[in-house]
Length: 76
Ligand SMILES: [Zn+2]
Image (tube, rainbow, N blue to C red):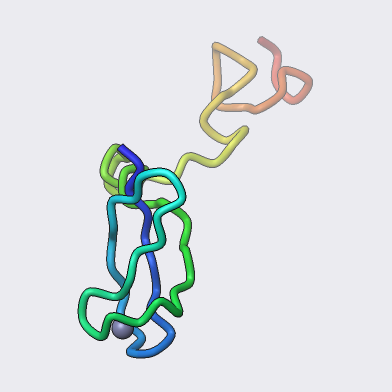
């Protein structure tokens, strides 16, 4: 489903809109078409875990025996 998020430049309202093809939506509150298309983040965030940011490298330890990110720093 192509749901896009828009920001209305006329009334500064953010809203989500289902857009088919090249349809140009207008603002639901002021009917302006001066909209900024935002990244479709709604579906992305709903799937994610609650604020658990996994730092690349920190959680994927190269060493299975300890928390070190590299086995050069331990004896495993
Ligand atoms: Zn508006």
